[in-house]
Length: 395
Image (tube, rainbow, N blue to C red; front, side, top):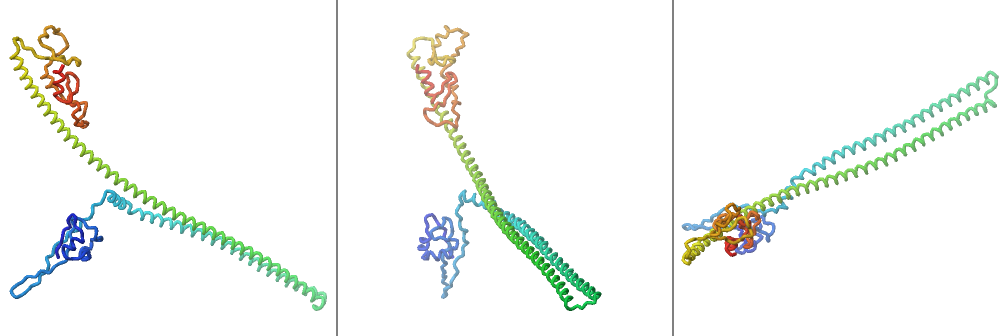
């Protein structure tokens, strides 16, 4: 199976046509291609293999196509934003686990609260049911005592009738009936009181159960609200951590970019300053040569015309910035020897020219009107050496 390295301007359909195959065949041989309209320069495509035949004497031998190593597809370069998002996702990968752990802890707390409420309800129910036992015990005791009292009354009646020699029939029978009626009425009263007490106790049980249900519903609602708040807090925490990580990555990236750009600008300015200084030196050297030539010409021309044996040369006062012109040395003897004026020649002026430190190299624009030369004698700045010469000669 042969391969083909994708070049700039290639399309999958064009490659398929060139090698007499189809787009679907190429996509099947190269499964990393998900979109037929999106391929990347430098990636390697597998092409359909063609069986080569080698003819020998009387025999045709089929050979397998040459195997080639497939190059790994080149992944598109990620942008800074994508890299920052990958970094933020990695930095916040454990936030979800932290939120789940917090919810699990709260679930235990909520379960304990529900168990405590159920325990309180059971205790209250047991206490109320105990009242039923007390009522039934009191009823049984009172009913037994009523029965005993009835039997004692009958026995006392029999003893009295026996002592009186009276028969139990007739009047005695009615007395027995009264005792039985009194016992029946007493027992009915005891039963009514018992039933009423049991009814009140059952009502109390119902009320307690309703209160428990209400409290349980309130507790469950509080638990659900708390869980929602915890989930909301977890989401906010995850989002904040994600944004912080994203911001930190972008800040570092911007810092590196700014540092790189500053270094590039600085290096560019340094090289530009070197070029400017070199250009200035060349201009200075050229102007100095021109001045020397003009001086020689002026000297030779002046000596041929002069009839005087005394030779003069021009100087200027260094402490007067307003005195631009050169002065004739023939008048020097008329000056006070103690004068503070110091006479220098144009050659000395040119030799003492310096770059204008008032304009740092990194602030120079390269304009022809920029005063980059400083004359320490006059205290002025000039754009070129020629301007200096004109300043002192064109009075």
